[in-house]
Image 1 (cartoon, rainbow, N blue to C red):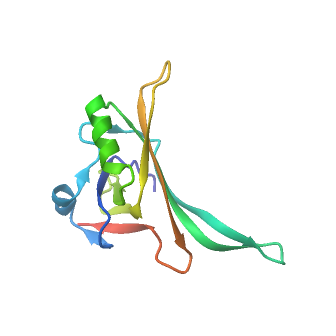
Image 2: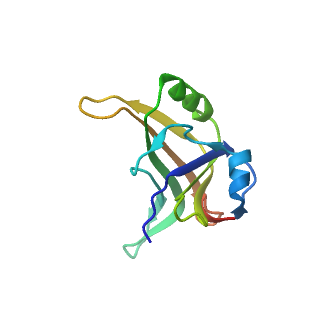
Image 3: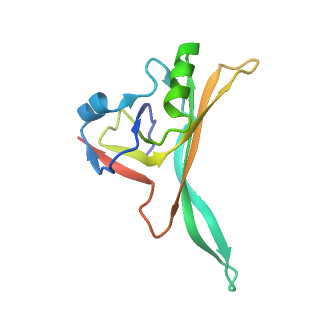
Amino acid sequence: MVRFYDKVYIRPAGARITTVAKSALASGWTLLPAGIKVTQENSMKTEADVTTAMGDGTDNVGSEAAVLEMQLINFTGNNETAIRAALINQNVDIVMYDSGLDTKAQVIFNTVLHPTTEYASGKEAVIKLSGKKRYATSGLAALTEISLT
């Protein structure tokens, strides 16, 4: 199923959840961005992080990483300052979901995001958010799906 993730919420890193009410997101999390638009150039994914080559030609994956890449447009200097203050060197949980298909959301727990502003000729100015949360394959995954009620 194709989804267009247009709702993004953050909070200081906290207890892991498996279900959350949309009203709780609205009241206990921060909608990111407020007045800014999230482009279609966003993704949450997992990837192998630390691997060890095995004697049979395969790789043993000892750790994975949950990776976030996102772009925001229509921001002001004040928005940029607020986003930087909220995210740089701060552990956060970040949720994104498609408001048209709003029963499931994707979340990365306890990650640090870095905002990078890009101004380029012939393009809209963007804030790129990127982050990576590493975790052992034997532990809890940092990227998971949760239910919205």
